[in-house]
Length: 230
Image 1 (cartoon, helix red, strand yellow):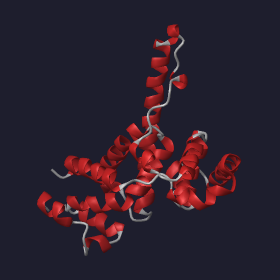
Image 2 (spheres, rainbow, N blue to C red):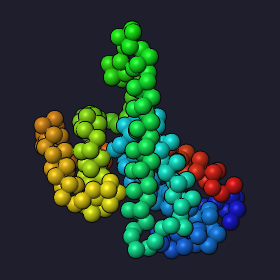
Image 3 (tube, helix red, strand yellow):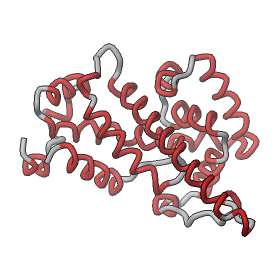
Image 4 (tube, rainbow, N blue to C red):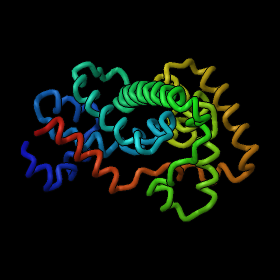
């Protein structure tokens, strides 16, 4: 399938109605451009999973692109015994965790370098708000996102996957490599922490947080397709 066909609208029916497993089968058979459907179908979940672990917006899209490339490269390893979305989430989480570790190592080295000046990465002014954060018109959404970002890593990732993205307990556990009881415990504690910050307002807005807007979706899809189709 050519890039011209892709640009003309590959995600239109009948392709868009196919289940994930069938699209994967066709990609494995050589129709590689169909990978666009999987990306557009799961971009919101992939973004939220990456964002839950790598809070630096400048790194999130890189994590997403690399995770998609990793998924495409290892697509032959996917077995329909599990949901494609769960399999993909696990890949995203692994890539995000690895990226976070590299970022922390880099920060540690910078802190050491600046030690004589008394500088610290943790005390530096925060970066300017990202474009999508500026786009949020409701102050409550901003309060929620700030509260979620302030959660410890282990609680934030569980909360975002369960309450923001809406994964089940078992799907969250599969994606993060946790047992169901650990997921339930961390989710309970995360909710308690957030309630102390934003009280009763949490439930009404959590599903609208961390939206992955169309322009960014197109940018990620285009970058991945350049890597795997051309």
